[in-house]
Structure formats: C-alpha cells, structure tokens
Amino acid sequence: MPKNFMSEKNFDLLLQSIQEGKDFRDGTADKSKYRVTVVVPKAIDVKAIRTRLDMTQVDFATTFGFSLKSVQFWEQGRRLPEASARAFLKLIDKAPEFVLETLSAA
Image 1 (tube, rainbow, N blue to C red):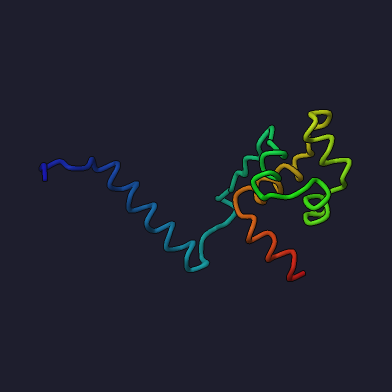
Image 2: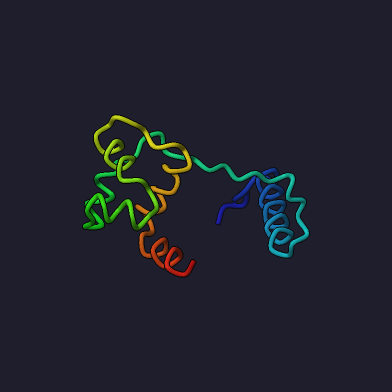
C-alpha cells in the first residue's frame, strides 16, 4: 500500500461519516441535518407494469385501488398519473409481491 494512500482530508471525512452512521444507528443523530430526497418518475409505463403482472385493466384497477377510467387514460396517454400515483406505480413495478401482501393484510 502506498505511503500516502489517503489524504488527511479524505481520512477525516471518512471518520466523520463513520461517526455519523454510528450516531444515526444509535438514534442520537440530529435528524434535522438529514434529508431524504425521493425522486418520483415524470412518466411511467402503466401498461407495461400491468402486462408484466399479467392483469387485465379491470384486475389492475381493482387490485391496486385505481379507477378503471384512470388506468385506461394513463395507458392511452390521455392523462399522466399524479405524482403520488406515479410513486405507487413505481413501487408496484419494483415490488409487486410486497404491495399485494401489504394490501391484503390491511
């Protein structure tokens, strides 16, 4: 390993991040200093998600609580789902089993 493997500045930043991680784990971190940014997609292919799940429009709408008209309009490109619907659709796309299990437990 080279003698100057890491600069002192980077070493100090690494130590600081380790301490912050420990504080966060222990529940002692100042949470006002942290912000989680959620990126909601601007567009989402509802038909591709529904097709991958092998569901009809009626089944998809009923299962996930959307109106049939909304699903139809989204798939036809006549409307864009609201941000909250796009976030939910992204979750359905990435973890359909989790969503189904969570909704069935409600």
